[in-house]
Picture 1 (cartoon, rainbow, N blue to C red):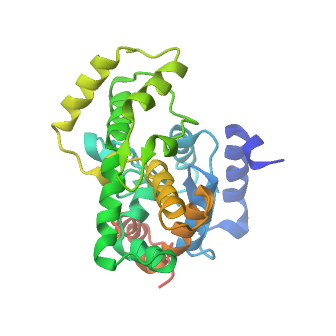
Picture 2: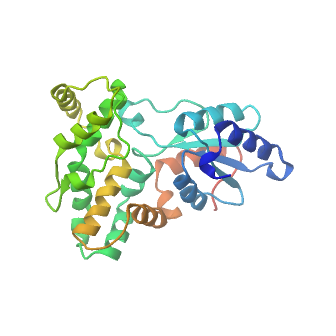
Picture 3: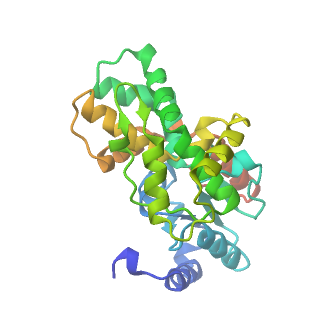
Length: 281
């Protein structure tokens, strides 16, 4: 059976079976949202002391799974993308749930200067002192998209963002976004949208800009990496796909860099309190 065909209940039963097996006593179970998270966190956690499992159904189901398993087994944690939680100051209060430092794990990785320098020094001749500016330009060029997603989350506008290509709407090296066309595409496929008036949406976005959020918290990492890939392909002339670039970012994000994050510190603190170990010493 393919991983995408496994139901939540089947996965829950599978984890219950594993935690009840004598050979898994004392093993930590780390539950994540997606398959790419498994590839990353299996590298960052000690594989002799942890099992990293993807729970079908995304963030809500990871929370449900942790809550259901905790009464049976204490060494269960969920690692989730923060999304807009840090901006909204609605950080998780549920037991054993940990959030990424920034919007999602991709933005948490992209936020690390060491990662950015390593990749751009490998694939480009962009001077090191200009590489941070490149990242800033990427985030600023798609900030209206990011505000739209925040507005959608805040007001439950029921907008559909999946499979909307942003790369052909941004001109490089100017970093100019045709947001009007992007918004038209979103509204055209969002039959159940609560608001379809473009002017009203733009007004609401403008109101959100007054809050001056940290773009690392606001921006969806997949959007940022799409544009990063476009820059490498169109300007630097490096032929990499979106999946190639996401994989490269995960590979460059080493355990030592992970140890500099708030996520690492939070999980390490939990491990100390529970007299367990998730990381190599």
